[in-house]
Image 1 (cartoon, rainbow, N blue to C red):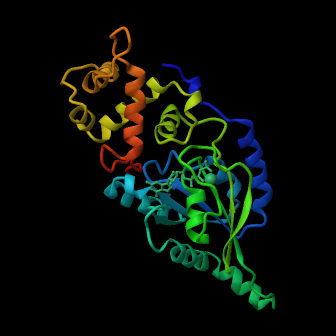
Image 2: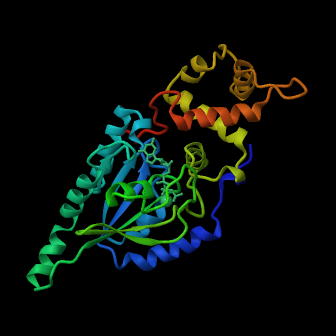
Image 3: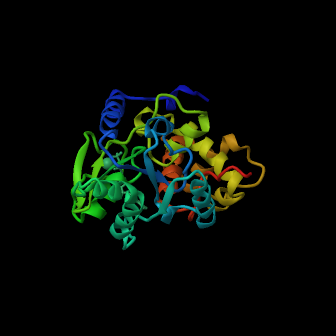
Length: 286
Ligand SMILES: Nc1nc2c(ncn2[C@@H]2O[C@H](COP(=O)(O)OP(=O)(O)OP(=O)(O)O)[C@@H](O)[C@H]2O)c(=O)[nH]1
Ligand SMILES: [Mg+2]
C-alpha cells in the first residue's frame, strides 16, 4: 500500500494557516472543532504551537455518529489537558448558542474584569473557529448566528477565506477554512482523516483507505463489519472489498468483483452512520 496518497498540504491551506497566525493576536480565545469520532487525529498539532497560551474551547462535533462511552472518555482526557470541552450534534442540538455564549463568558471572565478595572468599556469578545476540513465550523457558526451566514456543505474545503461573523452582541467569531498540516504523525492519522471525510477524495487511493479503515474498526468493534456485510470467517482482510462486492453484487462488466465500488460504498456507509454510532479511536489508557 502506498503512503504518499494521504500526505497532502495544498497551497490554500498554507495561506489559511498564515492568515490564522496573523489573526490570532486579535482573538480572545480559540474554538477548535474536532470530530467526536477521531478527537486526537482531528486535533491540529500546529494549533498547539500557535495557541500561545490562548484559552481553548474544544467542540467535539458529530456526537450523533460517535460511540457515547468512548466520547465520555475523550471528554475526560481533554479536560485533563486543561481545555474546556463541549460535545455536540451541531445539526440537531437545541441550546448550541447558549452553551457557546456561556463557555465564552467563562473563558473570558478575567479578561473582561481586567478591562472594566482599567475603565475600558467591555467590547464583544472575539473567538477564532478553526479545525480540520469538514468538521462543522461553518455549521456551528450558523447555529450561533442564527442564519445561514457561513456556507456549509458535506465536503472538505468549502470555506476558503476568513470571515468575521457577529454571532451575538457579546461574541464575534472568525470562520476559517479547514486546514490540515504538512505531515501526519503517522499513517493512521491520515487514514482516520480520510475515512471521516476530511480529505478530498480525488487525491486518495480509495481502496487502501477503505481496507485500512476496516482494519481499524475490526480492532475496536470485532465482527461489526463481518456481520453487516455477511463476510464469512477466515477470509483474509485483504479480500474484504471482494467480499463486500459479493454481498452487494457489485460486479464490473467483465464479471469481476468491483472493489472500488465496495470501497466507496463502505466509506459512505461509515460516514452516514450505517454501522451504528462508532468511534474510530480511543484515548490512551494511562
Ligand atoms: N451528523 C452530523 N453532521 C454534521 C454535524 N456538524 C456538521 N455536520 C455536517 O458536516 C458537514 C460539514 O460541515 P461544515 O460546517 O461545512 O464544516 P466546515 O468545518 O465548515 O468545513 P470546511 O469549510 O470545508 O472546512 C455538513 O454536511 C454538516 O451538515 C454533526 O454534529 N452531526
Ligand atoms: Mg466551513
